[in-house]
Amino acid sequence: MSTNKTFTMIKPDAVLDGNSGAILKMIEAAGFRVIALKKTQLTPERAGEFYAVHKDRPFYNDLCTYMSSGPIVPIILEKENAVADFRTLIGATNPANAEDGTIRKLFAKSIEANAIHGSDSDENAEIEGSFFFAHTEQF
Image 1: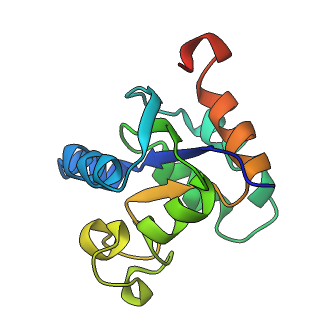
Image 2: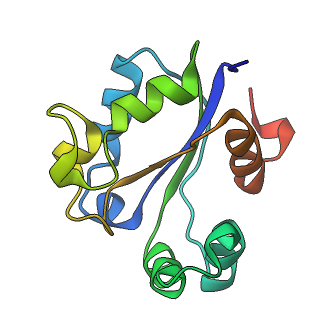
């Protein structure tokens, strides 16, 4: 059963390029409500904790380095069918394969610097959101 919340994170490339506001505007225009939002920067160690599921993958170290290279904007969103609808809004991981009008098609530079993260399941949305936000921050 799907829930009404998901987690996203505007990645360092998009933040550094000044695209956070435009991305957030697209998210809200698509009917999502912001539950929690902050600007922060991960240390390489915290990035490693967040991406621990990928620890044995060959891209893990580069991913942790990239995700700690600049500020990020983690966000918890609310909307009916949030996870699936948000995955559609952001587009394919590789922006070359993303549909026109998606966030990644508009703002991503490459498959590595793809502007935004979106949870892939209700369970991961809860885990990822709780990594950045206390329950008292989610309202």
